[in-house]
Image (cartoon, rainbow, N blue to C red; front, side, top):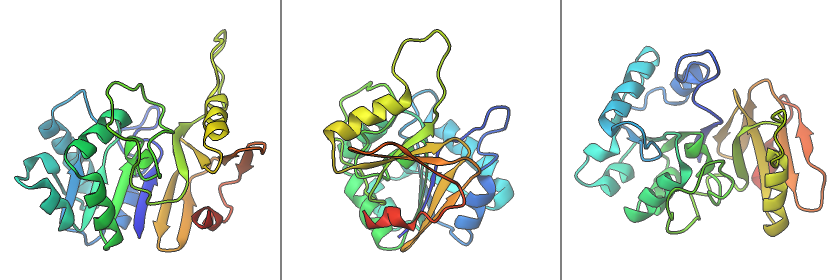
Length: 235
Protein backbone atom coordinates (compact mmCIF):
# COMPACT_ATOMS: atom_id res chain seq x y z
CA UNK A 1 0.00 0.00 0.00
CA UNK A 2 1.40 3.38 -1.03
CA UNK A 3 0.09 6.68 0.35
CA UNK A 4 1.33 10.25 0.73
CA UNK A 5 -0.73 11.98 3.43
CA UNK A 6 -0.15 15.72 3.69
CA UNK A 7 -1.34 17.97 6.49
CA UNK A 8 -2.13 21.07 4.42
CA UNK A 9 -1.98 22.38 0.87
CA UNK A 10 -0.58 25.84 1.55
CA UNK A 11 1.88 27.23 4.05
CA UNK A 12 1.42 30.85 5.08
CA UNK A 13 3.05 33.11 2.52
CA UNK A 14 3.69 30.31 0.00
CA UNK A 15 1.99 29.38 -3.28
CA UNK A 16 -0.44 26.45 -3.45
CA UNK A 17 1.23 23.06 -2.73
CA UNK A 18 4.66 24.69 -2.80
CA UNK A 19 6.22 22.80 0.12
CA UNK A 20 4.75 19.41 -0.78
CA UNK A 21 5.12 19.59 -4.57
CA UNK A 22 8.60 17.98 -4.70
CA UNK A 23 7.37 15.03 -2.62
CA UNK A 24 4.26 14.67 -4.79
CA UNK A 25 6.46 14.67 -7.90
CA UNK A 26 8.76 11.99 -6.52
CA UNK A 27 5.88 9.89 -5.26
CA UNK A 28 3.97 9.97 -8.53
CA UNK A 29 6.96 9.66 -10.86
CA UNK A 30 5.95 7.51 -13.82
CA UNK A 31 2.24 7.54 -12.93
CA UNK A 32 0.41 8.62 -16.08
CA UNK A 33 -3.20 7.91 -15.14
CA UNK A 34 -3.80 10.09 -12.07
CA UNK A 35 -7.47 10.54 -11.12
CA UNK A 36 -8.18 13.68 -9.11
CA UNK A 37 -11.06 13.76 -6.62
CA UNK A 38 -12.09 17.39 -5.95
CA UNK A 39 -15.24 16.69 -3.94
CA UNK A 40 -13.99 18.32 -0.70
CA UNK A 41 -13.95 21.64 -2.50
CA UNK A 42 -17.14 23.68 -2.15
CA UNK A 43 -15.89 27.09 -3.29
CA UNK A 44 -14.82 26.67 -6.94
CA UNK A 45 -15.86 24.61 -9.94
CA UNK A 46 -14.33 21.20 -10.40
CA UNK A 47 -13.07 22.31 -13.83
CA UNK A 48 -11.24 25.24 -12.27
CA UNK A 49 -9.77 23.11 -9.51
CA UNK A 50 -8.49 20.56 -12.02
CA UNK A 51 -6.83 23.40 -13.94
CA UNK A 52 -5.29 24.77 -10.76
CA UNK A 53 -3.81 21.39 -9.85
CA UNK A 54 -2.38 20.80 -13.32
CA UNK A 55 -0.83 24.26 -13.52
CA UNK A 56 0.74 23.75 -10.11
CA UNK A 57 2.10 20.25 -10.71
CA UNK A 58 3.29 20.78 -14.28
CA UNK A 59 6.77 21.61 -12.97
CA UNK A 60 7.05 18.13 -11.39
CA UNK A 61 5.62 16.37 -14.46
CA UNK A 62 2.33 15.35 -12.85
CA UNK A 63 -0.95 15.72 -14.71
CA UNK A 64 -4.37 14.77 -13.35
CA UNK A 65 -7.85 14.24 -14.75
CA UNK A 66 -10.73 15.08 -12.47
CA UNK A 67 -13.14 12.29 -11.67
CA UNK A 68 -16.14 14.44 -12.60
CA UNK A 69 -15.10 14.15 -16.26
CA UNK A 70 -15.57 10.37 -16.36
CA UNK A 71 -18.86 8.78 -17.41
CA UNK A 72 -18.08 5.87 -15.04
CA UNK A 73 -16.25 7.19 -11.94
CA UNK A 74 -15.94 3.73 -10.39
CA UNK A 75 -14.24 2.33 -13.45
CA UNK A 76 -11.95 5.37 -13.61
CA UNK A 77 -10.80 4.83 -10.03
CA UNK A 78 -10.43 1.07 -10.48
CA UNK A 79 -8.10 1.55 -13.46
CA UNK A 80 -6.10 4.50 -12.09
CA UNK A 81 -2.35 4.42 -11.51
CA UNK A 82 -2.86 6.95 -8.72
CA UNK A 83 -5.67 8.75 -6.92
CA UNK A 84 -5.31 12.30 -5.61
CA UNK A 85 -7.83 13.70 -3.12
CA UNK A 86 -7.88 17.39 -2.31
CA UNK A 87 -8.48 19.27 0.88
CA UNK A 88 -11.63 21.22 1.68
CA UNK A 89 -14.59 20.08 3.73
CA UNK A 90 -14.24 16.48 4.90
CA UNK A 91 -17.95 16.10 5.58
CA UNK A 92 -18.87 17.01 2.01
CA UNK A 93 -16.07 14.86 0.61
CA UNK A 94 -17.27 11.85 2.59
CA UNK A 95 -20.87 12.50 1.60
CA UNK A 96 -20.00 12.53 -2.10
CA UNK A 97 -17.82 9.44 -1.91
CA UNK A 98 -20.56 7.57 -0.08
CA UNK A 99 -23.28 8.85 -2.41
CA UNK A 100 -21.37 7.70 -5.46
CA UNK A 101 -20.24 4.42 -3.92
CA UNK A 102 -16.58 5.35 -4.31
CA UNK A 103 -15.20 4.87 -0.80
CA UNK A 104 -14.81 1.11 -1.13
CA UNK A 105 -13.68 1.41 -4.76
CA UNK A 106 -10.83 3.78 -3.80
CA UNK A 107 -9.81 1.54 -0.91
CA UNK A 108 -9.74 -1.50 -3.18
CA UNK A 109 -7.79 0.34 -5.87
CA UNK A 110 -5.08 1.32 -3.36
CA UNK A 111 -4.97 -2.21 -1.99
CA UNK A 112 -4.47 -3.38 -5.57
CA UNK A 113 -1.50 -1.07 -6.10
CA UNK A 114 -2.77 2.41 -6.99
CA UNK A 115 -0.85 5.21 -5.27
CA UNK A 116 -2.82 7.59 -3.05
CA UNK A 117 -2.14 11.28 -2.41
CA UNK A 118 -4.33 13.32 -0.07
CA UNK A 119 -3.96 16.60 1.74
CA UNK A 120 -6.04 17.97 4.62
CA UNK A 121 -9.49 16.38 4.07
CA UNK A 122 -7.85 13.95 1.67
CA UNK A 123 -5.46 12.91 4.44
CA UNK A 124 -8.23 12.64 7.05
CA UNK A 125 -10.16 10.08 5.00
CA UNK A 126 -7.06 7.88 4.82
CA UNK A 127 -7.87 7.17 8.49
CA UNK A 128 -10.35 4.50 9.61
CA UNK A 129 -12.98 7.24 10.03
CA UNK A 130 -13.30 10.90 9.08
CA UNK A 131 -14.18 11.91 12.64
CA UNK A 132 -10.91 13.67 13.44
CA UNK A 133 -11.48 16.39 10.85
CA UNK A 134 -11.45 20.03 11.90
CA UNK A 135 -14.26 20.96 9.51
CA UNK A 136 -17.82 22.13 10.17
CA UNK A 137 -20.38 19.35 9.51
CA UNK A 138 -22.13 21.12 6.65
CA UNK A 139 -23.86 17.93 5.46
CA UNK A 140 -24.76 14.47 6.73
CA UNK A 141 -21.93 12.29 5.34
CA UNK A 142 -24.15 9.18 5.24
CA UNK A 143 -21.62 7.25 7.31
CA UNK A 144 -18.28 8.28 8.78
CA UNK A 145 -16.14 5.23 8.00
CA UNK A 146 -13.42 6.08 5.51
CA UNK A 147 -10.50 4.44 3.67
CA UNK A 148 -8.40 2.99 6.52
CA UNK A 149 -5.19 3.25 4.49
CA UNK A 150 -3.47 3.66 7.86
CA UNK A 151 -4.70 2.21 11.16
CA UNK A 152 -4.57 5.53 13.04
CA UNK A 153 -6.58 8.74 12.91
CA UNK A 154 -5.07 11.86 11.38
CA UNK A 155 -5.85 15.35 12.60
CA UNK A 156 -4.34 17.73 10.01
CA UNK A 157 -3.31 21.34 10.59
CA UNK A 158 -2.55 20.32 14.17
CA UNK A 159 -1.51 23.13 16.50
CA UNK A 160 -1.03 23.63 20.21
CA UNK A 161 -1.64 27.32 19.65
CA UNK A 162 -4.12 29.19 21.82
CA UNK A 163 -6.00 32.20 20.49
CA UNK A 164 -5.56 35.16 22.86
CA UNK A 165 -8.73 36.12 24.75
CA UNK A 166 -10.56 33.08 23.36
CA UNK A 167 -12.29 30.81 25.85
CA UNK A 168 -13.04 27.88 23.56
CA UNK A 169 -11.46 24.45 23.66
CA UNK A 170 -7.98 23.86 22.25
CA UNK A 171 -7.34 21.28 19.53
CA UNK A 172 -5.77 18.99 22.14
CA UNK A 173 -8.93 19.15 24.25
CA UNK A 174 -11.12 18.27 21.26
CA UNK A 175 -8.94 15.28 20.37
CA UNK A 176 -8.90 14.17 24.00
CA UNK A 177 -12.70 14.18 23.87
CA UNK A 178 -12.55 11.93 20.79
CA UNK A 179 -10.27 9.34 22.41
CA UNK A 180 -12.39 9.41 25.58
CA UNK A 181 -15.31 8.14 23.51
CA UNK A 182 -13.30 6.09 21.00
CA UNK A 183 -10.96 4.45 23.45
CA UNK A 184 -9.23 2.07 21.03
CA UNK A 185 -8.28 4.83 18.62
CA UNK A 186 -4.90 6.50 18.22
CA UNK A 187 -4.91 10.05 16.86
CA UNK A 188 -1.89 11.73 15.32
CA UNK A 189 -1.86 15.51 15.36
CA UNK A 190 -0.10 16.28 12.06
CA UNK A 191 1.27 19.84 12.04
CA UNK A 192 1.24 22.03 8.97
CA UNK A 193 4.23 21.50 6.73
CA UNK A 194 4.39 17.80 7.58
CA UNK A 195 3.28 14.57 5.93
CA UNK A 196 3.35 10.79 6.17
CA UNK A 197 4.72 8.62 3.37
CA UNK A 198 3.56 5.01 3.51
CA UNK A 199 5.29 2.40 1.37
CA UNK A 200 4.09 -1.03 2.37
CA UNK A 201 5.07 -1.68 5.98
CA UNK A 202 7.23 1.44 6.24
CA UNK A 203 5.92 4.79 7.43
CA UNK A 204 8.15 7.82 6.94
CA UNK A 205 7.48 11.18 8.56
CA UNK A 206 8.46 14.19 6.47
CA UNK A 207 8.71 17.61 8.08
CA UNK A 208 10.46 19.57 10.80
CA UNK A 209 7.74 19.83 13.43
CA UNK A 210 6.97 17.19 16.02
CA UNK A 211 3.85 15.09 15.71
CA UNK A 212 1.56 14.59 18.69
CA UNK A 213 0.07 11.20 19.63
CA UNK A 214 -3.19 10.92 21.56
CA UNK A 215 -4.37 7.71 23.23
CA UNK A 216 -7.06 7.11 25.82
CA UNK A 217 -5.82 7.13 29.40
CA UNK A 218 -2.38 8.51 28.50
CA UNK A 219 -0.87 11.95 28.34
CA UNK A 220 -0.44 13.26 24.81
CA UNK A 221 3.04 12.37 23.58
CA UNK A 222 5.16 14.58 21.37
CA UNK A 223 7.16 12.56 18.82
CA UNK A 224 10.17 14.34 17.27
CA UNK A 225 10.19 14.54 13.48
CA UNK A 226 13.23 12.31 13.00
CA UNK A 227 11.75 9.43 15.02
CA UNK A 228 10.79 6.03 13.63
CA UNK A 229 7.03 6.08 13.07
CA UNK A 230 6.61 2.48 11.89
CA UNK A 231 4.98 1.59 15.21
CA UNK A 232 1.87 3.41 14.04
CA UNK A 233 1.27 0.72 11.40
CA UNK A 234 1.12 -1.96 14.11
CA UNK A 235 -1.82 -0.59 16.08
